[in-house]
Image (cartoon, rainbow, N blue to C red; front, side):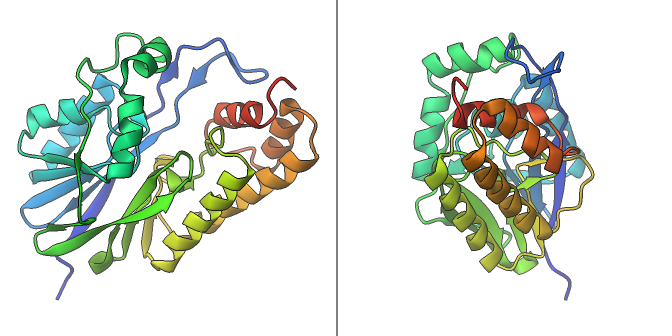
Length: 283
């Protein structure tokens, strides 16, 4: 009997960021591409993560509508704004879709959607593009919900590229939607991770690997890149390389250049630059 559930990934393309803090030699900054996953059955579907701007999320809405499915829920893997700021736009089209996340993720969301953070961080970078209504999720109290009789399990991962992250595991189809615990050929955001946090991130990747997924969806991925479990080890290796180089380099520029020499083709080296500056501030 064929699996009842299927999945597809929509990648919101890179968009310009307004900032004067540019990486060495760069003339502009763009945000990393963002993955949103639609898990669907015969009639209904669940969306995992949104994008940032109203325009990005309207394109996401059109993609979901084209599937012909009835959207029953929106799940946020973690509390970064670039993965939940689109909920209001999506619920305008699908008003019965319930927005859910764990209580720990909701705590991070509330900070991201707070007036001080939106006014100081998000709006200056994306002027006139952030929804005026930023919604936070209802608590997913038991950690499990269903789609057409199949379980979707929220797996706590702890600290990855921010605090209190999760992945959504769908055992019936071997799917792990990993949010920003996993990256797919995009530079990692390590700006919120000290040495201990990077160890926690590696432990989170070990936990994802223990689920033995057939497909593992990264929160940020190169468009068209395959969603294979090999990205788990690739993400783990990137963190270990960063750790090793951070230990022996004296300043952000050296750390940036040495990492870039190992990963010259990954999308969005600006993120690497910000990670290097966070680890080597003022150097």
